[in-house]
Structures are given as C-alpha cells and as structure tokens.
Length: 188
Image 1: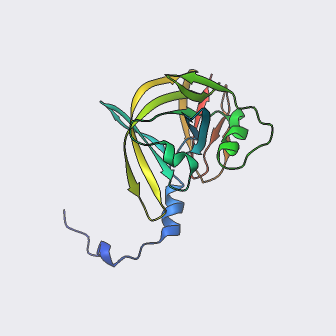
Image 2 (image 1 turned 180 degrees about the vertical axis):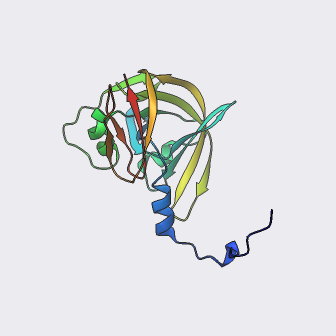
Image 3 (image 1 turned 30 degrees about the vertical axis):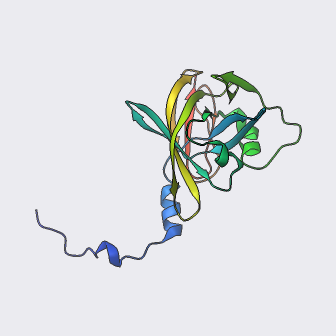
C-alpha cells in the first residue's frame, strides 16, 4: 500500500470551530438532568454531555460549564444523579436549562440521598472521583464512579442527530432528544 500524496500536513490545515460544532452536532446524544442536594435544596441542570467512560470500574463523565450554578456543587466526593429524559419531560429539560417555568411541578424521587426526576427512562447515581478543566469555553469534565444505574422502563436506544430538539416517533413511546445532537430512547 502506498501513502497518499495529496494530503496536506495536519498542522497546515486551519481549524474551523463552526465546522467542528456542526460535525459534532451529527453525533447522537441524549437529554439528561444532572441533580444534587446541597444545604437543604435540590439543584439541577440539563446536560447532553454525559457519557459512559468505563464498565470496569463503572465510570461516567459529565461536562459542566464553570458558570453553571451546579459546577461548585460537584466537587470530588460529592454525590449526584442523572435522569435520562423521555419525550413528555421536555418542559423539565427546558426548566433546568435555564428557562424556568413558573409553577412547574418538579417530580423528584430519591435514591441514595440524591434527587432524581421521577418517571425518567433511566437513573444513574454517582460519586465525583475527580474534575478537570476542559476547553477554552470554561467547563469542567467531572469523572464519577457509579453507585447505582437503573433502567426504570424497558428501553432501547434509537440514535438521531441534527442539533435541535427532536422527537422520535417509534412504536411505543416518543422520547426527547438533545440540543447539540440527539439520542432518543424508545420504550415499549
């Protein structure tokens, strides 16, 4: 096999951040709400930057903007929860994304002392292992060990993408998919 001759060296290709964002928007993600309990109050934020890192040991990662109120509450050793949202929970996702909805009832359930969104497709309860600064847009990658992962409904994933709120109509249940890409989970 011969090497291609028409490839420019990587260092000489200018980086296009808009193209990168559009490219990554094609990658499927889900919509979650990350929650914790601190000083007598439940706190949460909508996140689609949540992923599994390892099965052994069981680890997850969530990226949190440093300007987010939840950022200071996710220090090493802290516990938090992740709720994977269904289609009928869009109002909750918008509320926790900084667009508060006056009078919205937040249906929490509690597992291991952590508030989680009731009737979500799945819940993960985790403990922060460490956190690392990431990117020019200030955010922190929070690596965490899993205490419990529960699929509250029988579900399978159905990926989508495109960078906007999308609804996937599948036999059974519609689900909500994310802002910078999407991943839907269909239930029956």
